[in-house]
Length: 83
View: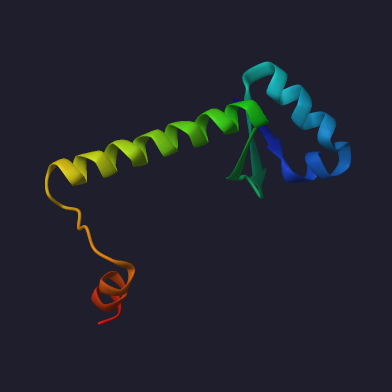
């Protein structure tokens, strides 16, 4: 993982990110010495989103299996959540 100072990114542009991603797959952008942002390539981001959605699906299935889900109409749901 490569650390890139915000000022370096500002002066050298996207090429700094491209080089960093080739080296380690992700880059951390620091602002005033503090790690603030992580940059990854789009294919890695897509994988992370897919994993996130898969976990949400597993959690929903577990909620249903454990009886923590309700089957109700939209009107019933709106009454329940709005009081």
